[in-house]
Length: 160
Image (cartoon, rainbow, N blue to C red; front, side):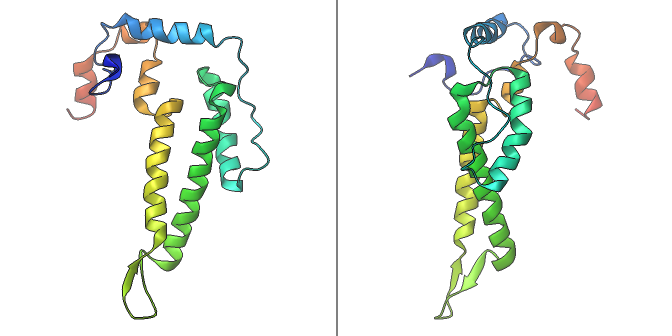
């Protein structure tokens, strides 16, 4: 078992700024990937239209962060494709509902419900892999940004 990533998610730097190793890992990763090309802003031609549209929105943002390269292209293609399938299943769900009546008068669950469930789980997993989640974004914050952060003040602002 990988002890470093076992159990609960890593602490956010906003909550526990006493872990400089997080910033060191980020800097080592950036240095190792500096010579690898960024992902192209143009989506692959074979992708579905909704997947291409998401690609065009995500890639410039991911390239700006600098932790996603051509090595991650397959995962990004899968993420965008899962989104397109998720969106298509949602349209089917709107049109036909979550249950339908078969020829014998029995109620059956619309297969689009399962597709939505599977796609959302896959997107969540791929999003974490690509760094498209809050925990990943919070780890990208520089230590300088944390120096003047006051947890109690932030909690009061959000009603805590």
